[in-house]
Image 1: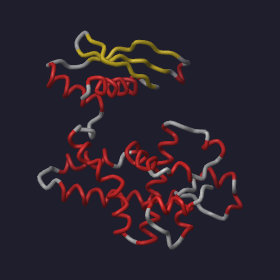
Image 2: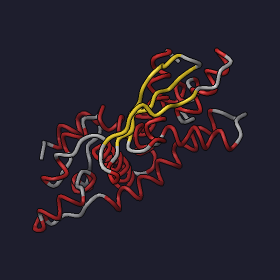
Image 3: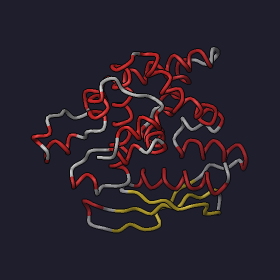
Amino acid sequence: MADLAAFEAKLGYSFQDKRLLETAFTHRSYLNENKAAGREHNERLEFLGDAVLELVVTEFLYAKYPDKPEGDLTSFRAALVNTVSIADAATKLSMNDYLLLSRGESKDTGRARMIILANAFEALIGALYLDSGYETAKKFIADQLFHKTEEVVEKRLWQDAKSRLQELAQEKNGITPTYQVMSQSGPDHDRTFVVGAFIGQEKVATGEGRSKQEAEQDAAQKALTAKGW
């Protein structure tokens, strides 16, 4: 495992109980291969950290947007604390370098690794909370996530990509986007769909996914990028 003292330096915080930090980085799969390790995996810490994260972000949004209704605040919170957002924050902290994983899990990339990173980020929040209390955990969350809030609100990132594309295409072009399956491949249990996103006659982008819905969302996201929206 990489030197946790280097991570603490990056974090700007030194744990009183180093085992809490070790546990935050320990994935269940690691213990399956290292039964004599004498440690526990991070799922209980993740459970705790998830609750602290939700409270801190809720408190922040409640104060920041006094005129927004509950529905909007719930959507903002969901966008700030979703898997992609917190895995991105974990990546910026180089948490990937410190994860304790099984040999199989360590080869995984993409969505699977993103989920593991997001869970470790929440476990780290739980570890900070137990080691030093609410204010320390709150400061960490504020430093890592609060700067994303303006972008989430201004770019309407709480909406899914298809909803955002539809709203913007109607606003700017008076046209509702359409989606067309361009191709599909693979066996029935493992198909890949390629879908085109069209605004009028213009094919703006194509997306891929394991289902039509997933491919449409991917196409919509790429269309938003292509249009600079």
